[in-house]
Amino acid sequence: MLKSMYSGVTGMKGLQTKMDVISNNIANVNTTGFKAGRVRFEDMISQVNTRAQGPNGNGLGGSNAQQVGLGVQVGATDTLMGGGSLQTTGRDLDFGIQNGDNSFFVVSGDEGTNLQYTRDGGFYADNEGNLTTAGGYKVMGYKPGVVTENTEDANINWGQNGGEDKLVSLTIPVELNVSKDPNTPQMEKLQSYNIDNSGWITGTYSDGKSYVVGRVALTSFTNPNGLEKTGGNMYKATANSGEPINGGPSEAGFGLIRSGYLEMSNVDLANEFTEMIVASRAYQANSRSITVSDTMLEELLNLKR
Image (cartoon, rainbow, N blue to C red; front, side, top):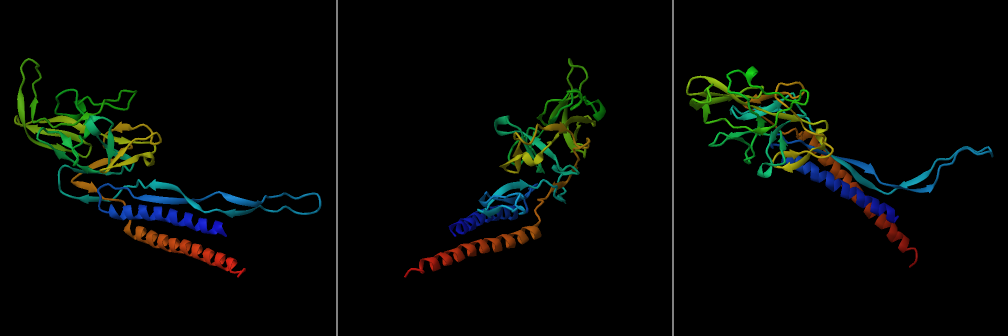
């Protein structure tokens, strides 16, 4: 009878964890790029009262094992990596990833080390032209090997025959040397810039021409569910996520980026409130099993008055 009380306790503890995850999902229903969590349960070890037996030579058939379960435990807390809807903002430096649920923007880590990954494409340009997140982390990507007006001549290559270019922080130069002759520099000032759906960054300078100054990088993982949330809409790679696979928007497997959009949370409020009701009732039922077991113990103690 005491086992039933402890089984009820394990159920209440597990359901409390489920409520924690549900509450976090609801709290982040408006968080850009947030991925909802999910709790899965599994039964705990069972006490074997009688082991299974096969048919014997006395004409008797086999018998099944007699087991009593000892409760429940949390089996996993998953992150649902499905893409959220894109919401229009009309802001040039807001980007949402379309058709690339396993793709992430790459940003610098603390003190420029340990790259981080995010689905939050709300970027900013500081007074030096650096592309950054709201938290000041620099957006990573590729820079062209030569000053060019055409993306085909930008000399950016990755993921082919081991020739992957190194990721660097992206900067839209306030002044750009557009001269073809290294001995006679020609500095032009930035007038405007644009980032297209393929991540190419082009700046229009005072000579009236547009030059390719970089490309936003995207990264995918063989197991994105293995990424670890670090707060601030950021993830970091783990031993189970696999190594990052770098590429660019519009490349096969990486999706597109849409300027003027942000990805909404993928939290389904109707589902979360339904799960909340189920968890609440299950918690109540586990609590009732404890009180009923207590009543039975009280009756047992009252046998001897």
